[in-house]
Image (cartoon, rainbow, N blue to C red; front, side, top):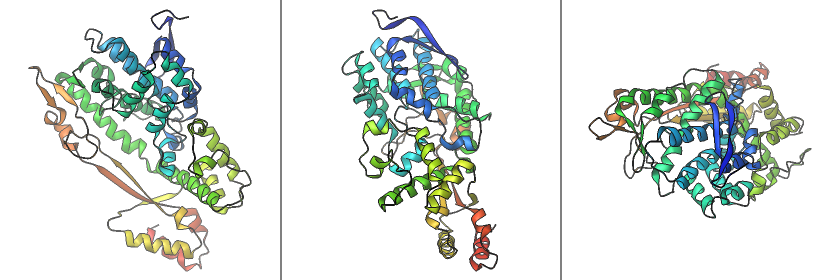
Length: 432
């Protein structure tokens, strides 16, 4: 099936709704896809709880990872074919890093990370260099090859051009997830002309630049990303489901710490709750495990845990009102007191959730989270930073938009007896 230079004797393809086909010619890529750690990504949704808002968003980290790989393969093998800038080893390094960049994501990704203080990139690197099937496949390329792949994920690899293909302000990861998430959610916001962007890409010493003639396609990409964040990724209904999800996990951990007697022991969570999580434990976690516990925890004696699980599984979500933390913290304190007096635990049923995004920024030395700029290649060979040429991008550069909402269970409030003084006060303060 293989030949001596590490190529498959016959190209393999995956049918893909976004890129038509994902092409595999390298044996190491084909074998990486077959590993248990990569197959696990089929059981982790790309968009966490977004399927609760947009019912088509059932796609997985698996098909996104294949998509990122395919974009990088096209850039290297097709777009830059006449401009060789990588040797064969670095070509393979780019392809493997693209395929494996999300390998360490846990179930419900960012919500899970937030509760338990995990970092999916650290787990990605640990899987790549640890005692895993993925590591065994990568070592077939060279003993130090897994370490190099991990360095690309960590953004510490010496060739910054390699890193920029997978992690920058306009990279294969972002291009795939915008197009893929738009496709599966059924919205048009995330669509942009990727073919045009690929045509105007040019490799430079330490990053990819874009011919100035393609500036409008890059502008379109940045605006698409902006729209997707506020219309899809930060949708208030999705955020409500994430609030409930995180509160379930917090409640389960709290109960475990209090030696609560679970009807169904949370064996898959024990090492997490005790801060003894091993890599072996982590790669066993996927969303099917989480859903199993949410199903059985509906019947737990703890009223809060069972209620939150029922809400999440049956889409009985919290309502919300706009909230300004700089002006309304007194209101929040009053509400907490009223909730407690009404017998509703504010630690689980009164939650401020914040979303924040910076659509584009340019390099400012010494600042936290320095961002490499998107650079344009002018007809005279000069390199110019995008916002200095584009009025549209200049208008949003460095402008962080933040949104705060206060979530609460309106149905619980409505069920309070009308004679309950707190009921009317709560409704007045919330403005409902």
